[in-house]
Amino acid sequence: MPWRWRWRWGWGAAAGTVLLLTTGCGTVEERRTGALDAALDFERALGAGDGVAVCAVLAPAVREEIEQSAGASCEEGVLEEEVPSVTAASNDVEGIDVSGRQARVEFPTDTLFLSQFSGGWKVVAAGCGPQPERPYRCRLKGG
Image 1 (cartoon, rainbow, N blue to C red):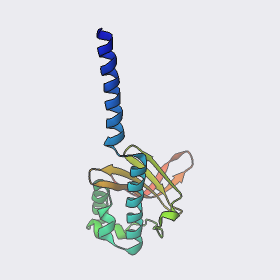
Image 2: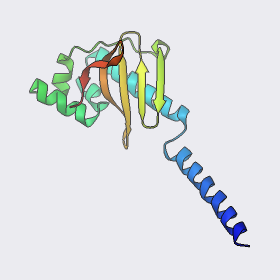
Image 3: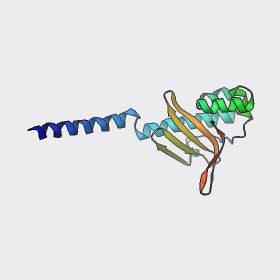
Image 4: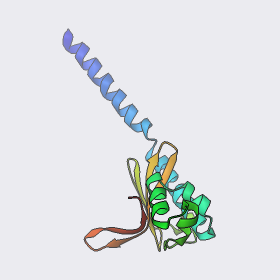
């Protein structure tokens, strides 16, 4: 009866894979909430002129790009960037799209792209606007 053994192990392997995939990255709602929280933290810090808090939610490559282009620390340089800030409240959000470890959060005057790192969600691009039939153009992004 080797077919029974294969059938049982086949279903077990499939169930284990599904369990791993659904718990490894969190639920979609958990990822949406995490991405939204990071986006709101970014917008609030930017609106308050708090460079330390803004840089805390930026991805490492974005922080490095700011430091190189500004010739100053991220905390100083990020406030010189022309990134529109919004009065961030969760009801100001026009849309959230999450796919795996990537997210896009749309506000009325700004679109943010985020990635999930081991330390949580980080902004990988901000000040982004759509272009017809072309990728978004972002004022703040990593190199």
